[in-house]
Image (cartoon, each protein chain N blue to C red):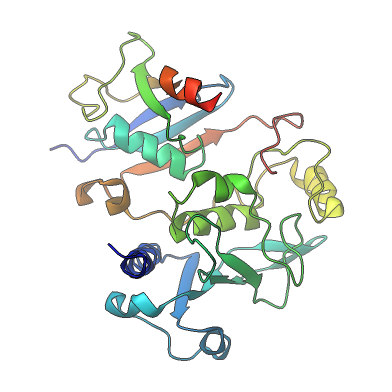
Length: 212
Length: 95
């Protein structure tokens, strides 16, 4: 199979995954170019047309910090899969929302700091669906400790979160989007067959840092 | 086929302080549960040279990856340990 066919298949694959992940907290629009994305025009809605899609507007309808004690109820992030050797290399990301999340992973004018563990370490065995899950958790501050010395792009925000949330997610009850069951070969009858009741993850300030 | 969910507790492979309690269908398989734990970021995705398995804490018996909980005789309140293993050949290759 040619690389062109590989890319077309991959684009349809990513589009199908995101389509099946739409939920209360996540939505998206798909576009052929950035101009259409910016103008919110000509959104691609059919998987057959997704071979031309390389730009996504990801919409997260969940509260996230945009300053000390200040929240935004929705965050929009742009994604472009037009990168060399995608999906080996991570897609480009950028902030669309005017309010940039107050977080060590977000900064105005910069791509989202995903960390190697979120994409690069998977060596291409990863989809845009996984990226959506990762971004949702970053927005909810739902990740393991990265060590006391970690400041990322915003040490003040880390300190604020540590003081006010003690390392816990902003909203521990949020229902994240889920990867479609067909991705893991799960029969349809298993959909929604895994409901997390509690997840205790030890908060370890000295735990292994898993950002580069 | 029973559609009533059962509560199970999953123990993290490397940190005994970490656990995940979930309501699942009795028809869930270890392969499915492992994928769900990865989705929930309770455990990281395995590398190409490693894999996860589940065992019944009470009996120590490892579960076959495509056997349902029901078929393995597990019901409400079951506690399962998650194990992570890396193949020896892969370790050698990584050196």
